[in-house]
Image (cartoon, rainbow, N blue to C red):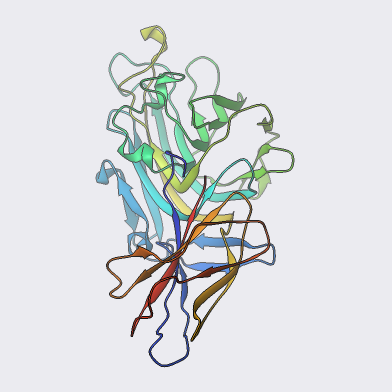
Amino acid sequence: MSPNTGPAVYRGLAATSVGKVSLVLCLLLVTVAVSRVTAQNQETAMESFASDPLARGWRIGGNHTLFSWNTAQQGLDITWDSSKSNSFFHLPLSTILTKADDFQLTFVLRMKDITLGNTPGKPAEFPIAVGWINRQSITNQNGYRGAGVSPLYGIKNIAEWNFFPDAGFGDTWATTIISTNNVFAYAHTFPLPLHTDASYRITLRYDAATQTMQTTALNNGQSVGTFENVLLANTPDFRLDAISISSYSDAIQIGPAIYHGSVLAHGTMEEITWTVPAPLSSLTIRASTAGTFVEFSSKTNWLYILERSINLQEWRPASLAVAGTGARATLQDTNEPAPNAFFRIRAERP
């Protein structure tokens, strides 16, 4: 397993005492307003913010005052305040994204205001951000977006949309990808404003075949322009395991102080839709006198381990690790039969 990731866990619950198995398959920590599984073994889900998203697996890391659900507008009110600590309104995914995967994120954002230079002595531009992260960024006390390429302070494993308010170069839209070893790939489009009181539908789409990240955007249904693609063919890989609205701290930045920036912005997230590959699909489970067997359609570049519990609290490995091939795979419980047993599959990205 990569040191930058945690496992994705699929849970199959089986009662083995009655001679047959009933199965419940669920995605860990993901319960959203609308979801479906496509024929291409990808999961598409939408968060509409019709009710409090914290009740559906969304989490806040950092300063809780920067994010609040707006009951009246049924949206998420966001404050990007770089004078505060790194803060993330995030949803853990049921998978781990790499350059080998196709994935997409679309969000609808309405800005109320955006101001640069809110931190004394830091008058230059600084980004607001929405995209994907690795959850280790949330607990990394030494990660600073403004540090750029830095062995000590550099951020790792992000793919996000950014906006930098004008500080002399023009309002700038950016698509930024940072690898597992802090290598940057990005595209900037400027001058291009981000108007307040306008509904922007912004899409980031990554295509694994061409290793390209593409950005498109609509303002009240009309295209806002053409964005340069970010080409990742010659860049290191990334590991992404959460969707995040990210407010970065301006505490540590590189370069002369005159170029250090800060930002204070307010907006409302009205909707987020995402499509990601499932680590496995078409799962079945069966019990017989020969043991318990779990079968599923696997994916390459994943390792699968069957885990068993008798109380849903303590989980232990129940099979050897099996490498995905893209074909059907079988995991067998190697333990002695139990009157009641519960099973889940742990999927790890090497």
